[in-house]
Image 1: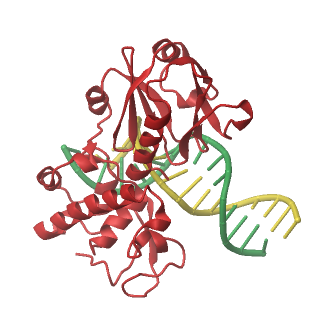
Image 2: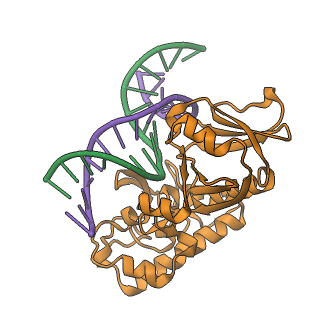
Length: 261
DNA sequence: ACAGCCTCCTGACGGC
DNA sequence: TGCCGTCAGGAGGCTG
């Protein structure tokens, strides 16, 4: 599922395909995924070119030559694909952008958990939707300060996009596994050292995942993701991983390796 | 302000 | 082999 590293790959893909291309037409196949009306969407996108593509957390912001930014979120099964021939249209295409070179960009969503929106500016969108700064742009001191006064399980906090955005379910498990901390540990039980460790592991997991182009198979062998499945084994202890629920999300944990405080 | 639970949606998967 | 129930998950909304 697309989290920060996967969305970064989508951003790079868009930069190498649709940047500076002019949209001559759009086609909305499933209106449910559009957060604005079709006329508003067409008015601000058709006839405009894509002039910059940036990412904050799991969101992509496409600056247009018009007044608005196009905001794209992929949900859990989203993707996009650049293609030319009609016969190559991807399955589950929900929105199509036609460019003046004859190519098209398909916004794909299998389970309809993503959406498209418009905004005046990235900062405006962040304010309106309580979207925190990107995990790779958040300082250690800001991260540690944001933990003050909280007592929810640390995993729930990592999944919350309000202060730091981009971390989803597999990354939260990965970060806490590498931090040797149990995902249910209440934030107010963490030491200053723990907080620094978590921050460093957030950066590490993001950086490695992007460097490996989000191809899980290429991640180092000590990464949890290789064993993050039913019957998976802890790389460090050899014990079977436990599957629990934290914050309503499926969570894999090595109970001997990850300390609960 | 914060925490926790529910909802959306539908393909994939496991069990019989 | 085929059917059917259950699971997965990001973010927003609602409640306590």
